[in-house]
Image 1 (cartoon, rainbow, N blue to C red):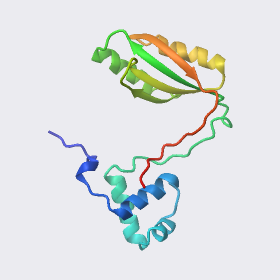
Image 2 (image 1 turned 45 degrees about the vertical axis):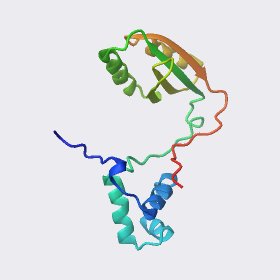
Image 3 (image 1 turned 90 degrees about the horizontal axis):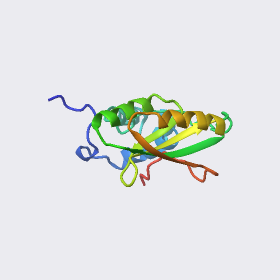
Length: 163
């Protein structure tokens, strides 16, 4: 059996410095190694080694820029709950494959409760929303959808509460 290259977090011990590094990096992925090492009171080489180890062990998955949705012309954020008529593996796999390839779907979670999935999507306007929600509606197995349009964004964060 092939082992998963990403280690389970319960198998590794993160010390105080590792946690500090993660806290700082999740808030500023562009921080220089020199600045980071200064903030955690390590010299640059050991700091870089720890940073690399956190990446290699899967604690840090990616770095990306957060774009201003409104400045980019996306004025509508929608949250759509999707329910299936049956829960066959083929249907849910097909749904997930299709959704992963839709660039306007920002997040998709398989959830518990009265619905099967919840999607977060970004649209330029309600006309675009109307066109695209029909794509979701036509995916095989989708039985019902219910959409909530965001009126005001109160908080957005991908940061984990480390400290």
